[in-house]
Amino acid sequence: MCATRPTPELLAIHGGSPVRNTFLPYGRQSIDDDDIQAVVDVLRSPWLTGGPKVDEFEQAFASRVNAKYAIAFSSGTAALHAAVFAAGLGPGDEAITSPLTFVATANCVLYQGALPVFADVSRDTLNLDPELLAGKITQKTRAVLPVAYAGHPADLDPILGLADKHGLIVVEDACHALGAEYRGRCTGSIAHMSVFSFHAVKHVATGEGGMVTTNRADFAQTLRSFRNHGLSTDARQRLASGSWKTEMTLLGFNYRLTDVSCALGLSQLKKLEANLVRRAEIAARYTAAFRNLPGVCPPIVREDVKSVWHLYPIRVDGDALLADRDQVLHALRSENIGVNLHYVPVHLHPYYRERFGYQGGEYPVTERAYEQLISLPMFHGMTDQDVEDVIAAVRKVTASYSRDMDRESSPRREA
Image 1: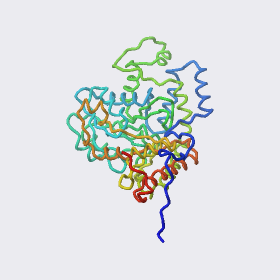
Image 2: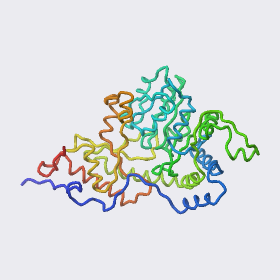
Image 3: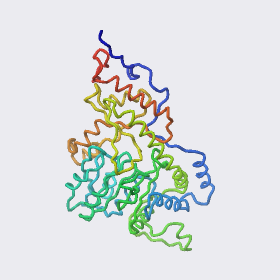
Image 4: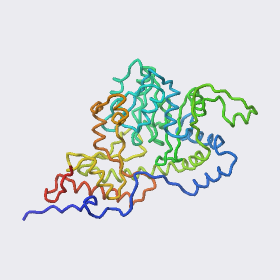
């Protein structure tokens, strides 16, 4: 008598009951009473912006990442813009970065009138491939912007070696990577400048906010002036000196981060280590559950780094499933699992296609990954049940779409 395969559970997208009754987002901030009190204290103080909490946050942050200087900005994008300005980018220059990133990484180059040039990523980490980067360097190249995708540090030593050989500045987009380590060194202390974000879903959340870290005093001075309209002094410096006079020395912006945000950042920074531990626990549970699951490829972490799991991006293996990435993503969302996509490659956005003529096919590793990637929920406030719900939903969806199921028990592939 022939054994029959069990019929897969009916997916919510096809009318079945979802794994969860409530929607679980892919990321979410965690704010406690200490955070609230820190903000209230500043609201009752003489300084709402440009005050002492900015210095305190910068000093604490620099100490945490083992950098000499940390300069706070109103957003991660503002911090990226400031860093490429400090690197000297201007019209006629080029800067090389990854196409698999949020658009701000490349946009900040455009803000300076320079040209973003893309190099493809490594197949394992989806970070900038140093070998492919080398082939993109020209006489016009002035900077390199490696990205720490999902919290996994970029391969910085060979990138810095190329930069030293060609006289380039390395601006690390570490917006996913606060607390990460590369070959025993803290992210934020290795590149010429490193950029962090404090968006609500990041490891430290101030709502919006960013930071640039550097070990060079000249960069720090330029960054501080650039965020403050290009002025040579700020309000507290003038108050302390008794002088009313200040001079604009460069064309800057109002990219200041408020004392309110910095107070929240200081409070959040105290919880960073526990945050990192919890994210690592969630990632380990996911990886154990998906390591041998047909149709799912968990992320890879190289032996010489510490990833901090801003994202947990799986890759859907279309050869093992009767569904593509989009179908799996929509099915998981119907199960109330708030999966997301990181990212549409920069060169495939309409603006970049229309302005620079990209057609697709230019960066095959990135584009193949884009067709497969799904970001699972990953934030330190997740409960153990949240994690189990995600695992259950992924197993449910992949089982339903498995090519190994008998055709009569498999869902019809959607057009």
